[in-house]
Image 1: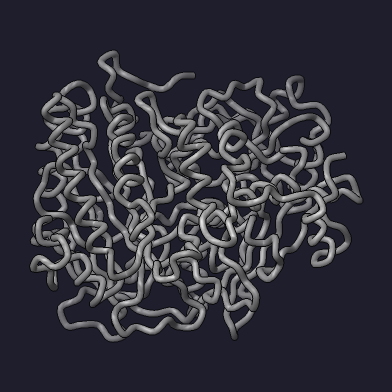
Image 2 (image 1 turned 180 degrees about the vertical axis):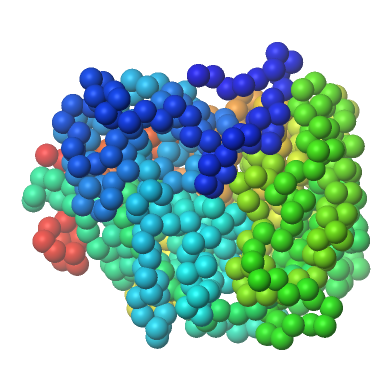
Length: 607
């Protein structure tokens, strides 16, 4: 089965707006075929107790789509271990499958045929349990298939919450942690971090985890507990799918109320003004100083971005509308017909209408905020932080995090905004309109391991917001997400030009880039995840600076715990290799530390 495309090179209405027939979570399941109906073709020897069927995999923007692959639904971690051991004996790969709300082919490669020796593991069917683990300090134990919606609702019922989360609640916890999912929050001026809360990625809040790893002594895969203090734990905190985590315990804090005020009247020239040139209260840095929590959405070829500002507000302000549930922007999650019709014209061969589409998105946002009484809202944290459903427009995103110091945030966004505008105009002059959805900017803290509340904890080894040890003054990440419809002419080269800009401008002197794992990166003119100089150079090098480089260590550690490469993909095989000099690849003797911390035995190599 191939993607639905138009001869002109545009995308169909289905590709623009998502599948018209939706199941729970907004997904269409196509061609599910139970094992009972295909017993003759079932993989030989597959564990009889594990539910097995065929299912097509398709990711968020439709750019990764497979034939009907064998998919199973284990009921507990023991069945996950059984599947891993079976896969090792049969030469199969095992891939965790959650909400499929991602862009990078970290789960499976596009076009994977039905004959491929791969089994997907649907974590969302049964691996969804959660429970409060302790009250002081508070923690929650949760399985990987639980959604962020379910987790945050569960925490709210118990009086707890998180500081910053992805805005899409349909994501699975396992998926979020695999790619260091995050929100948008830094401390406002004078704000003190509250116990159990953090400003970095959710991976940094892990207190302990359980993963399926190879045990050389038993000559089998086993489920093993890793406390956050274990020296190897940091390799699993952001593992990119190179492992299978069956359970995590997360640090959480007391719930709190937020006020969200929306702005559409701030010119981009003021919001992104160069530092020292009249920047003030309505600069991005000014909003950060006052509130600490900002998301900016800038529609293409418009002059006034949409600015969402959250502030910790215990008591409801008189003009704020109280909200008791999340997803309070109906116009964002049920795309108006005028927008969908114009978007369809843009992607089906009228790209010159992109400026009109950008202006229409701005107009619809203004009207929607008014109609929904959503300009100023107040409520418990999850009801304000979650606002995007799977029914929103499904674009493709290229994204990087720029690590810098808090005092340099305005410079980072100013330099980006100036270059982005020039690049859009350069492309327009050539008759190309590569960006038709817009840019989103978020600002987060870095991964401070003290936020987990575990002695001797270390930051996630492969997190994009792992601190740079040689720059202790860098405490902030600016995230740039550039969104367009998949297949838009010129978009690949546009993303490539942006990546070159990030590395040329944020060159390590005052800021430096890292890729956002779940999105698009390593672009050539032909597409993403292809540039060998980025895959084998820029990305590893971004983790190799400082006195304790982590790239080669993390690659070697993950290899050691899965020497049979059960948990891998073609992209991971290309990406997760020892990088340039700067850190030693993890050796087999070094892996024996696992045996001292996590009996009965650590990995001892293939066998």
